[in-house]
Image (cartoon, rainbow, N blue to C red):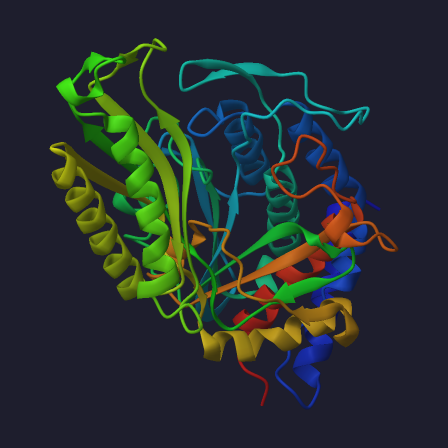
Length: 436
């Protein structure tokens, strides 16, 4: 019997049982996901071998659009350069829900040794780079393709509508200062004609074992800002620093002074904050004090008011240190993502869905992480529910495993089935409505 027909019968039967029962819970996801496991693995490996950087996900978008079209949907392509969306209309009235997966890879040269490892080379911000799905977005796309197939197979019994959102450039814009990813999709009207009642997403995560999912209500991933600070001094010979204004010394003073903002001016017991410089560029010769020094870094916070306060303090600190030496300081801040926050009521409603999918003992409360995700842009438009799917093999300490973004990141493919079951179960339960 063809897989799609088997899937349809299994899940339609499960819905019939749910309707006849005493509760309004949706069907169990397990019967349909079992039939899709091999296909999801195959899709993931294909995507892993053909990674594409943000706003260049041309092949990935084509794979996704062809799949959605084969399922009887009419995908919209080209939104935010390479994004793809499609709406599945169920045969019964119900709510609207959006499901999101990010598609882009990273400028990382793979070192996993997997038989399907990436050998792709490209260019990133003017530099030749290897390209790898070092963050697991290949798994996200494959999982959402599987969820789309599962839901399409029983559309006649499905209440409500589902929008599938395949997003480019989650890892940030390929050009500094450019709008990309979720925000660009929203700016280009991704939800103009489809107002979701909730938006769901997931991320594979090395800090959990395969088989586990992690969730937290409220703020749990930080906002991410990319900042650039330019110090302008006055060039002079290195043997006569008093004849000019040394921007390198000022930059060092600003960097050390900025740490006092975190250590002495922010209540970090209530508001964790990270202010990090990742680059300092200045000068060309050992004996010439240059005109300028440029620092680039990131700011991470869990509260948008605290974020603005730290930015204001950072700018003031830089300007005053510079002025004391006769230099000037200019700070520019570009937001990559707001705080990722799970809407508490939605989290309380859908956490049991994760338990149904993977078992109570495998659903863990995760701490706040200073990593960031632009899923938060969608979750600021509609109530959001976002969870982690563990990828470190069972029996291995997650703290010792290569973390996401590592060239050695090799997630356990058992996470594909876990993510598929969890996301599908949460979707079905939301569409079916709260348990009576």
